[in-house]
Image (cartoon, rainbow, N blue to C red; front, side, top):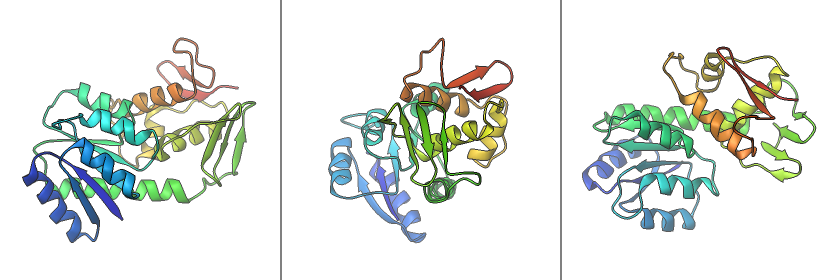
Length: 228
């Protein structure tokens, strides 16, 4: 698998490269967003690790550019502790967030986890059925496609999985805890905003009205359900 590492601190990029190559990954290093965009144009990647603070265009903007065309996992690196960075990264399509300084072994473990999810959600069909049609919103597990009134909606594997679970529930309310533990495979914490941010991004892609969403409805204090 090919991994893109973008960090203007050469020592960090070199260290990450060493650990990833030891795990058998092919690594492409870049120190600017411009160089990263050139590398992306030249060949496909399976995952990207992006520093937030870059000398030309910041990592958030680079993540947005990647999400315009690709759905592979994106991990953001930042030296700042504020939750706003994490929420911003998740809202624009990042899949994970790691604060500097970090343990290279922890980073490698998080990368492996993202690649496992990406491979599983991109390659395997959900257990029940292959297609849901809610009268305009169609989601297919066999091709991992989603359309809204004929318009293709590009979803990341995590976004696809969340929407599929809501469709599969068929109007039943699904809690944030259940969504998180089924999609991310980790224990849910009460202060975890990850599901909320991904739901917000899904609604944006489905052209939902913020105060009156048609497809993904919030049941306050309980969770989310698919609209019909």
